[in-house]
Length: 84
Image (cartoon, rainbow, N blue to C red; front, side, top):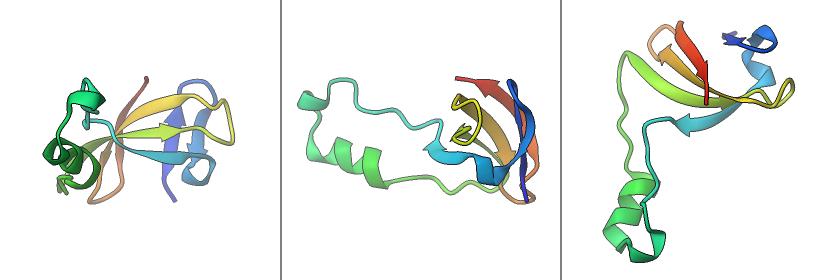
């Protein structure tokens, strides 16, 4: 079980949170001007890093705040967290 440190509620189990995806992915600035290649890259192409990775998590069954969590994906250790 992963314990995620919520700045409002304290450490909570992962089951209280909803994974929001990679925090480093940016939506195209003007969606109406983006071509198909830009949308394909945004929607489907992701890095699969080994080591630390910044993710978005929402404390769904708690304060409902969104957090940026830096997590080591090898051992699931939470390195840092911050509010978004």
